[in-house]
Image (cartoon, rainbow, N blue to C red; front, top):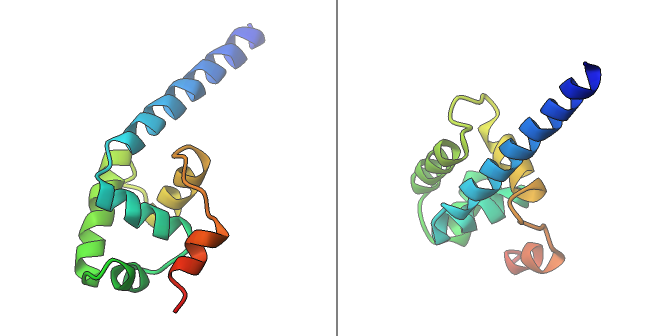
Length: 103
């Protein structure tokens, strides 16, 4: 019985990871940029500066991203998006990306 429970949990986890990975594929190019900067630890203001937009636009984009990824009711949306982006979304925090916005 315990083996079946572990097997079910493993399958359920795999299914959720697959759905999350697919959800990252639904992001627009701009949303993907926002996620990449968020995964590097940038604030909304810093992201806005990098993308030559206003902070309010970044907030709207993050809200849209949270909905697409299923984190819209999560109190730690930014953290959840960043962790999942690195872990399952194929986003990598690289020195090149970090250096690209250092002025």
